[in-house]
Image 1 (cartoon, rainbow over the protein chains, first blue to last red):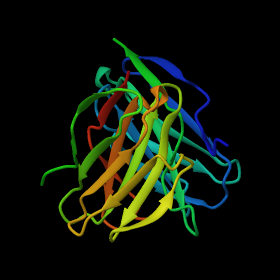
Image 2 (image 1 turned 45 degrees about the vertical axis):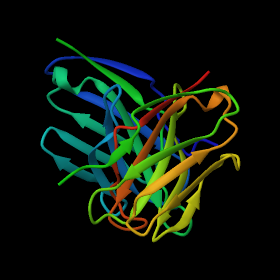
Image 3 (image 1 turned 60 degrees about the vertical axis):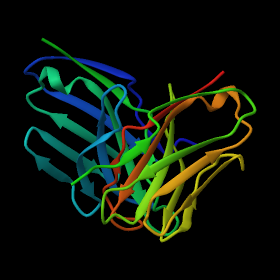
Length: 113
Length: 113
């Protein structure tokens, strides 16, 4: 039962354009969402997060949007840079037995110079 | 401040053997989680420890076990190794149990032959 889904396994974007990575979840008990970036042979690196009481959070070139009614979140990267090429995982956690981080399967982002 | 340290980085074992992986969390962090990453499966949650107690457990067989010591360091053990146990095992530390952000180590690449 995949509670967090990233339906696009890969995405290619031109350098300087906007990258949009999507994530859907099914568990309504989730109340905190995170995005991680992972390079090969390294552990995931925390990028940005959002609480369910917000619908947007920005940090430099990264913005996360949350649509609770649709159980959907997205990560926008503007402008995209070659160093952004990596696998991006969304993750979610909640309360009352849902405290563990539940990850999606990841989206491989390739920035084309 | 040192990050999360996992040892060893690489390991090759034979089917039927057992293996112990080690994780030292960020100084001051008291919660440690373990994840298994295999191609196409994303990060699968194994278990989470806080104050030497297992707080959450994922859907893995009993061959997978772990523990946490009083200094917050954690070990995970896999007994009777199977070929399908070949994966990247990641450890993450958080300040407290259920705390929002988790910080990952570089992982231990286990190959079972």
